[in-house]
Length: 77
Image (spheres, one colour):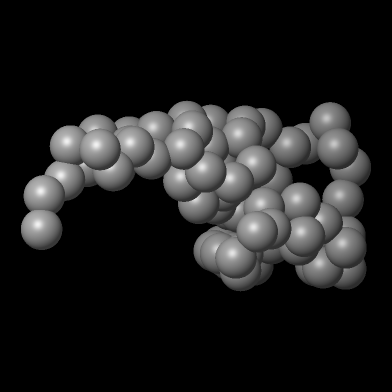
């Protein structure tokens, strides 16, 4: 995957900042990638290179990669 085609986008989900890596074009469709614990969206880069005609969206879950950590101090049990 040509790194010049990668775009970092940030959004908020329930007030939590989440970063996504987006690679285009979408000639065949869109694939949505979610990483496992302690990883980030870069784990998928080799697969993205092998699927160049697809649009890829890789999410960095909160506290991983480029996404901000979540504070749980305001929660009560």
